[in-house]
Amino acid sequence: MKTKIFLNLAVKDLNRAISFFNELGFPTNPKFTNDKGACIVISESIFVMLLVKEFYQTFTKKEICDSTTTSEALMALSVETREQVDEMIEKAVKAGGTDYEQSQDYGWMYQRTFLDVDGHHWEVFFMDESQIPENM
Image (cartoon, rainbow, N blue to C red):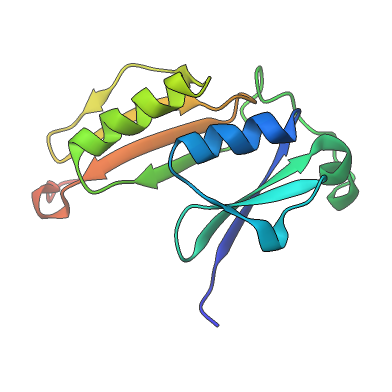
């Protein structure tokens, strides 16, 4: 089996969080979804597990941060074009997320940021690897 990434996020309202990611175009895997959590399919090897806070807490002894005021992690998703970066941000805002931070254009990389409905920080970027400066 190839290595897969399962990103686990604590959410306040599971149905709202599922709806948000579905509106971005990411389907839910019903095999790993119930009233405590849902599996959002980002790609063949990347999944986001949306877990209600009480269930999330069973996996850690640490306090769950308030992701609307504290940075827990920066999740970054690559897309195939600059236009897809803008489209993802538009979808996120329409679904109830927040356009967060100004766009960054480095010539070889273009990125924008949104916060999901629970305040988790997502960066969406397009990168033309053939244009990466040699002196990075």
